Amino acid sequence: MKILTANRLNDGEAVWFGKDGVWIETIEASDIVGDKDGEARLEAIGKAASDNNEVVDVNLIDIDVLDGVIVPQRLREKIRAAGPTNRLDLGKQARTEAGA
Image (cartoon, rainbow, N blue to C red; front, top):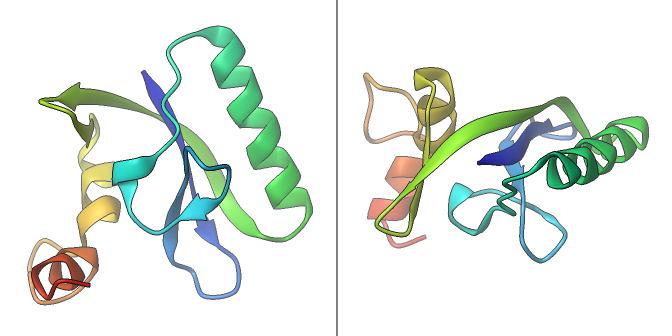
């Protein structure tokens, strides 16, 4: 299974392409695909968004879904989804704890 990730161009925020067809700031509602047609669809969406200067560094990433939770397979993507590993009070992980 794969999802589409990028960085938003205007502020550098890590974003994921969501089920609702918009770029979102948290991984939980990402549009998950499991076949080559789905991958091609997401790649086309990412290319269009990059061409329109909405996002940069567009990538399809491998994920697992464990107990209904999206978990990136690579450590780099886990960190992008949460925040820095040495400061739990920063990044998306801090916003979640604060109820944001």
